[in-house]
Image 1 (spheres, one colour):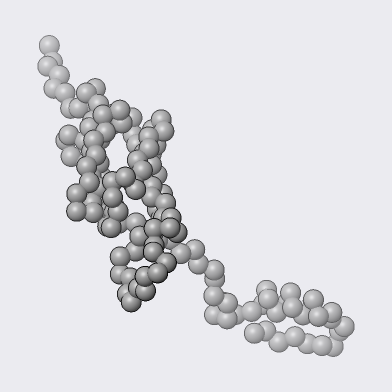
Image 2 (cartoon, rainbow, N blue to C red):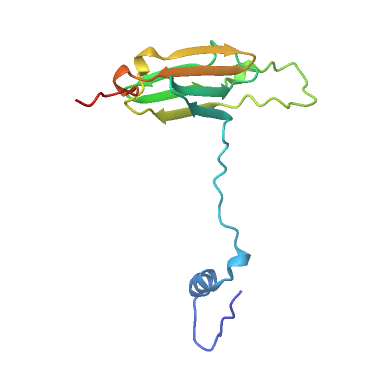
Length: 141
């Protein structure tokens, strides 16, 4: 921390503010926003766009998939009543955290024809390409 010379009259607030702005960077740890990344695979091929979203321990009724214009939103909200209060948990390795994932989907994909399935804790979504965006061959005259 910086040294404050007390030859002049400083109020305690002056000393506090001066020490705060002259402090070494190592003395303060910057606040961190802990962002928990939900396990998602997103990939594309010649047929369309694929999402594989981990939903371990969840049923398909608990996961919500919404489409708002060009936004795909997949969410799950954990309820406190999901856990039984008379159960003693020794170890909880499967995190059933709430998540709210939103993706802006390009217009070349047809969100009106989205397909979804859920098996073994993995939500699979498929968004096909629009017919106009598929590759075409043009003959030259």
